[in-house]
Image (cartoon, rainbow, N blue to C red; front, top):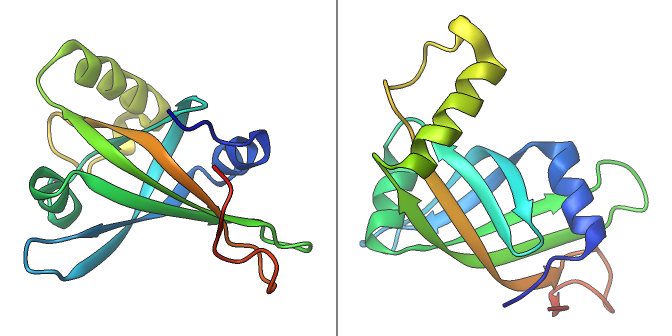
Length: 140
């Protein structure tokens, strides 16, 4: 099991919505913004609201990559690779659905009746900070 550095956890909590990359069965890349929550130092969670390309890709290939970076100097950045487990129509999905609805109120119309809970288990963490000594270096 791989643990995320505290700095990365802090950045994920500050960003809230991050780019998540997946690959389809045709080899075509896909990237979509996902509102994430850090469950623990090894797990990131998001709700799959629209059940479109990212969802289909993850059902076929349950791996993804997330990138997050500081928006102002010194521009620290991370890439996180991992595997996902999709929860649908179970207690885990229902709990996340309730939390998302509470956070968005009745104005949140651009979604289906229920969501799927995506649990992203961290497998690799890379330093993506600009510079020859850091960018691309696996740190955990």
